[in-house]
Image (cartoon, rainbow, N blue to C red; front, side, top):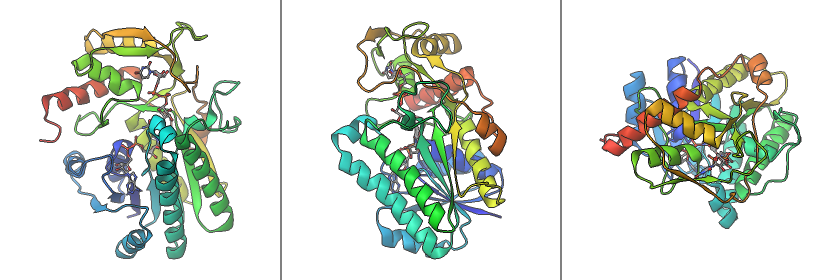
Length: 343
Ligand code: NAD
Ligand code: WQD
């Protein structure tokens, strides 16, 4: 049985990925410092899969702890590295917090992997590396643009680190560029746990729908799109999780053609903010209170993925549509509202 270390495994995307890894027959070990997640997620993973993943509460910035972890958990075949801070606005205000956490955790991991002969890593990158491409959809060879936030810089630097380290060591790496992950597991036992006022659209929509927020502000309706609102490529978190299993398989079965590979993970379909609002109302039967506001600084007008490479090389394709994304996000929000999530 292959053993996969999942950093950030109690987080939003990490927890869904641990579920899919267990379902696919992997042994999983989670490491997370719980800076943006909760321990009860481990119980929920066990409830869904019938298997309890091992859990270590460790900060990956503490190298001795990472060394200790790899000693105790010998025989790790691959690492999936989700652990990072991800609040774009905060990263603009506190760039060093992001450079320290996101870059140092990756450096420590790679050093210890190299020392201990662990040769495979999958890295969480982001479509934010593309900025606003001139030509859409964005392909993996679309030129990257200078990052507007420290968060974006850490993703570009993470990719570069992997490319260089994989050229010089035995470590093979795959960077996955996520477009806009949304939704929750169909059991509504795990999902996104935003802290405070959500920055992202989907949790803001569901929180407004349930009455936790008064009104959703749509950031601008004067863009050059069909209805004037921005276009994104929303992808169901369970589809995203499954792509990680495929990436692990590719590394472990030595199918990679390059030491470092990059894949877009999206549906390939662009959706406007107003289309999200309308679909939410249709799928949930809830009226959504919204107003049109100013454009948000730093927003790109339109971004969606070319997904052919992942289809071809990973043998992966997004299967779930917008209705599944909205209904599962809503079911999770209802549970959160009932207070049954951490019961
Ligand atoms: P999340 O915050 O839910 O999960 C990240 C987890 O990492 C959290 O549980 C947190 O406690 C943990 N963590 C952070 N720093 C750590 C450290 N130093 N040591 C140990 N654990 C640490 O975020 P997510 O949405 O699941 O995102 C996972 C990854 O995907 C991140 O790298 C993020 O940048 C990337 N990503 C997310 C999105 C998105 O919209 N959610 C989009 C593109 C890329
Ligand atoms: C989606 C659309 C907003 C909130 C961000 C990060 C990116 C990545 C994913 C990690 C946009 C609009 C939003 C609201 C709105 N994260 N919106 N009202 O901006 O594509 O990407 O999250 O890697 O790095 O930048 O996602 O969910 O914030 O916004 O109108 O209250 O919804 O303008 O068009 P975004 P988002």
